[in-house]
Image: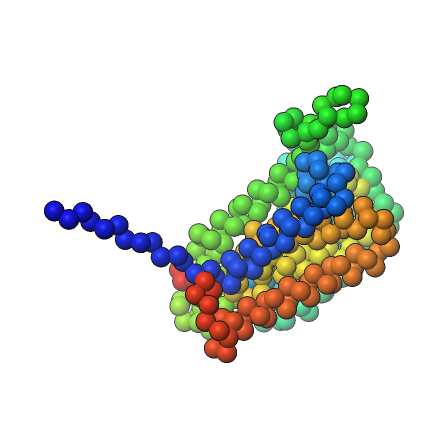
Length: 363
């Protein structure tokens, strides 16, 4: 009696999105390891990584929203303006509402922030999806509108004085076993802000939505080829509208998280954050042509940009152009890398068994 032979599991080829995401993760790990070896200091402490998460939680959230839109073949440059408007509106609301309960303050302010983001998402999504206006023009107008409304609410900075919200801000997750011992011998636990936890939850939820939900598969199909998606029975207009609504909601949430980290409204809040979010999405493996992307890669794209900023600051290069040059060089490298991947998976490139063309997912 012969024993059955177990079938050998074939190794699944990497899609281009998985390949680009893997490269992003590897670059971040190597970059952070080199910073630990060459700069030492704070990079040897877990709190440095947590500080990067705390400082960039809002950017992670809007980058996830932009990844959704870019996978669907669109663009949204109004996210920074929506964050600015949300922060200012919420700051004024907190100072004038009279609510002192931390729980009620949290819920009321969050609903206001989400409402502002939803309003912009619905308006811009309708103009783009149902009136066929170019996304760049619509979201550019949205950016100017949001910045203008922010200035109209208050020209001067507004600092939050609400005691309930101050209690929320002081709430941090402490992890003693990831802390460090100070010079005086006291144990300093690693601290993670609530906003960073919210950002990590957003990354997980958006990943699950894009990976397993029907709406996520429709967004991939829309970005891959809108005509093919239409022939597959996908409601292209509704799917496109959904992507902008989600981006708007995440922009409002990002404004709320920003206010939790820096409790003050200002007309210049989150300036250029839309460009940083787009750069992070591209570095994470999202193609500008649509149909390819992954929010895990986007998360590491944000971490790469933030780590570069931290390294430049600790190196004593405090002039702003060093940061701009480093971001531009990194973005140019990944755009070139994407072009190489597109060439390799096309007819003119060599056939590599571990790289395959990503096909639009069907419902």
